[in-house]
Image 1: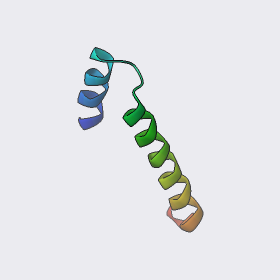
Image 2: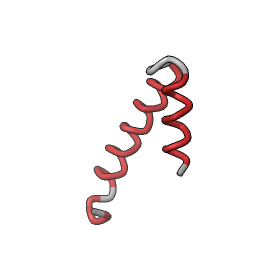
Image 3: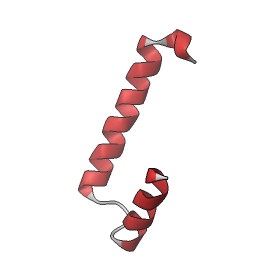
Amino acid sequence: MWDEGHTRRGKRRKPRTGCARIAAMIAQQTRNWWWTAHPAAH
């Protein structure tokens, strides 16, 4: 639900702002770290 609202708000504004890009980068790094540190969580 949150992702859907966030995507709508993003489309209304610029497609990719600096904050959005940084947030996506941090999320990707966190996901990679999680899978690397917890391989059994798959």
